[in-house]
Length: 221
Image (cartoon, rainbow, N blue to C red; front, side, top):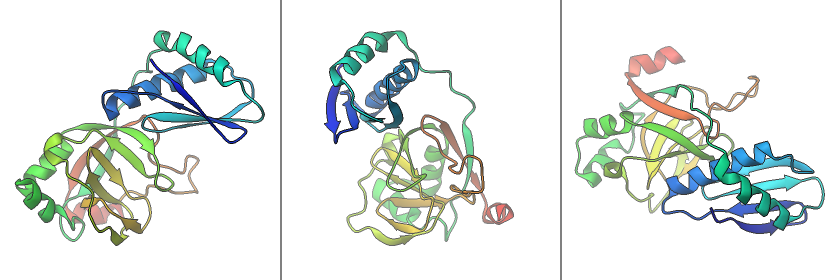
């Protein structure tokens, strides 16, 4: 494994990996993250994983060369922890919740039901949390469903909207602008600060979507 160390300010260090694909990079980042957890790095106060890098935050100074050497020596001896059961996410793919489903089907040359079948048959990994608090970047999306992001983003996307773009699946935790293709909506609340763990999605978890009717969607409310 090759690690590139990039200092960020006085107290943070980015460790970047290289890989053949996003999935490969995510696996390497996960391996480095597990090693970081086993090493008691002096002054480490935060770790933020991304798609091809992770950032380490320290209380004071750090020795980047020593950190990279320690991680490189240990990376081959640490395996990913066994995954638990996937988080089940109900999604209504009916209108008005799936505003872009017909356009996506037309662009891909598939029936809307085929889009739903392909989207729900796969178990996804949460590769990264970004864009806004609690927004999961999940992959990898079936190649038959991959298409570019919208050339003109929507000014308003409802919270809970399930969207696809490129190789990713995302779920909007809040009402916000967005440029991904909306194919459904979940009734679940993604962020709730009254919960002990406010965010529904966590880095590294597995996720499975399953369809519900409009009536089923309303029952969650």
